[in-house]
Length: 160
Image (cartoon, rainbow, N blue to C red; front, side, top):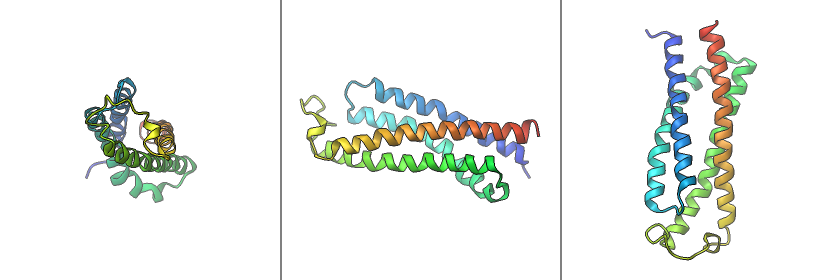
């Protein structure tokens, strides 16, 4: 059977490997003058592997072992990670509505229209706020959980 330290190392490497996907995906959106459908699809092609690299070890190895490791640091690590995913869901509640309204206004296929996105729907600014807060919160809590996870990894498998 594979040792816990080998699995922990693979999990740590997978989660760490997701960071460049998140950073580059963010850069794609920040750098885009206009978010066309192609830019959005390209962005999703970048961040989805990052989400998979994080979620697979969390769901398959970390969560099932949590109850066996209920120390203060482990609980804090789990809460930070849970908060990250909660904020990701919060962001998705905004992006889904934004996608629907932009699709109806044909802003993905014809992005050169001179339309203020906030004028497309009375709730657009609230949805955009959800998206921004959710994405920022996800990244912030993901980073905190990642740093704490690396700390736990070093204590348990490198020094321990």
